Length: 245
Length: 270
Image (cartoon, rainbow over all chains, first blue to last red):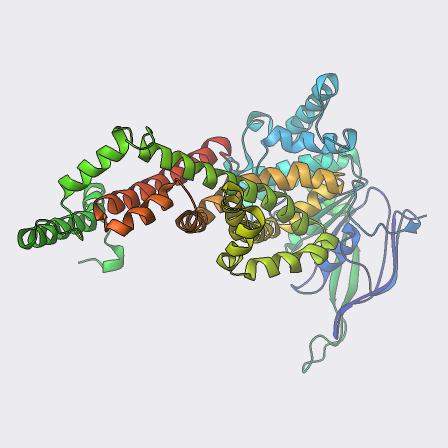
């Protein structure tokens, strides 16, 4: 049983074919980086894994069973922007994930449970390097710190799969470097599956254990949407990754 | 010489330029008033500023011979009460319905055509119905404000809910939130400061309905008073009253804005 299994997936909107014939298997703990030209459907594929899009044809399996058709807490997501909650400070942004789980009605914890939740969140903030900013609001954070916070929000839920949609695309190069190291260290410690969409090929090879290239096999010049993209290359990059480390 | 679009006035110049039009209006008023009073000392149309101050201080600081009450205070309290009730009820309705239709598609399908329909009814046309149903008392005035303002506010809140980035809503789902938790912990807290903003925007409309209702049937209130003294062409009362209403409107707006700043320091920033 594979962690994620995609069999012959197609996705189209009306006459526009985005993805065709995508076959993909992923094991737990793998770090897959999806690359390809813009508009090639890699984000659409990520959104399917997230559960907000469904394949038009084909079958997508999660741990051997039907794929969940809405987002849930076993698959975390970090978007390029807007992933944090503006009205909560840093620590509450992390704690809220625990509160959702334990307090179904109020969404708030009290007493001893609250204390424990804050301790747990503090540990995670320390791990992502946000300890000193715990009582700041997201608007007071830099872009990189916001992304750290977003990662921390997801980590507190201990997801089986972490999805990253161009998470460092809007950051300065130096900041991206720091984020890469953070992500690599978290991944090596916790060993969950990661699927990351990126347009930066070197980033893909640096972070991924596998790099998947999306592109169109056939191109119709008069009608570009006649053919969809598929995975044209599946590269094992785990060796390069170790050398870099 | 810089381009005109790049020339920015200094702070003092800015203040002076802002006050200039007001000053001009006052000067023009005083001059025309003087001219008219020279020809006819009993002219009512443009009373002198002294006369207005006199009339107003009677209204404000002397007890009325007829009712033994301070008229201005009484009118102000009566009007503000109606306004506050109407606007508060509208805000509560807007908060609940706006969030519900902004969040749950099944509720959107059920309720949003109704809200749309209501917001298209010319509210003043409903006034006779309200007077018949609720009588001439306070209820009909408050209901008029609610009918006039609540649909607009609801639509605004709905829009603001829709403006919350979908990424955020997806993100909290991956943090395990159910619908109820998304509404109570993610959407409502972010909508509250926007509700206050929407209230600020719709207060002008609420004033219109308040003054209209008071003009037609009331025994006290700012709108009642100006329409009452209109019979005697008492511009020396009407003009200061209008000014007073404007000041009240400004103060309410100012207070709500401060409220937002203090309570929601994160609001409007990204």
